[in-house]
Length: 370
Length: 58
Image: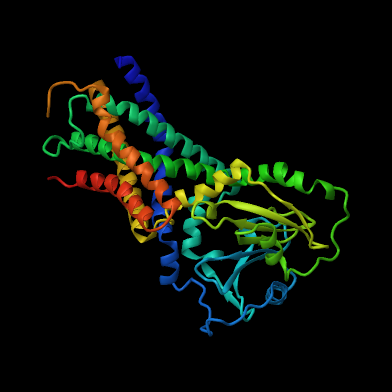
């Protein structure tokens, strides 16, 4: 590589990193406890605990659960029922002032599917873990915050690509994984920056790119509404607003018949951003490991309970579905969570050493000038 | 430290192997449990160990 080319890449690397480093440090630091959010919620006593009952206690039907939810929060609208693999007897329930209310203003709790008893989910509505999550997702700044973090994620990817290009000229005379501990502190941190940066490259790229995709989820969902959903509900365009809706009781059976072999992940009630004004939408996921992250929506007419459409899966919804495990590291057991945490800490070392190396160069530059 | 300059291909040989291993690890656990998970732990364990080892003077 010509020295001018190296200098150009070096400028790209310096500036893309400098701009995103503070945000990336925030993301890496808040992300670290979030890897273990499930465990920490249990530890903090924020996880919902259902009462002990005989294992085969039957579940109430869905409409009974809807009534229990409405009795628990009178005057609010149903938004979602969600299913959690870890708590087969619980139904995560999300309600808000109106069905269309934005997610940050919703209230989340769990209904015991056997008794209809409402159980608090403090971690889903506030508290330490929620604060960390909001800092990580949008810095409490809503869509502009998410878009800013998405842009920082793109800069992070640019920094990794340019860093990889620069790895070659730096390592020309050094065997792989050399760390010169016996030389100056600066050389030691330069070697560590290069070594840790290059070995964590794949992981950091995947977590970075999936983070960008997740940060753009509002746009992805909007695209799905305009594209896929709009086509499915087109026949309802001139239909007057619903005055009465059919009971939710059989929604899961109806959806299961329409999509054999799949399982329900969540139900969107009419009027939310995952459904239409005239439909219940049951989001089904596949039974295999891979397809369990991919959603197929079943739209059910909220008046007649007829299946209107079984949505195909647009690529961008699949990308968003697959981004979640690949970003959270929650799909390979406890050892994977620990490795995720180690790689996250190593990323913090790369960010910190990069900052240190840049700062050292500035100071040296000034001394030479003086 | 060797004073002879290495080819670019040589410089990126180990990083490329580690990168591929990491990618295999990341996607393996998406496909199943058991052996797939173990493959993921190996694929991500190698970069994690190499990174940690660098931090400690040998």
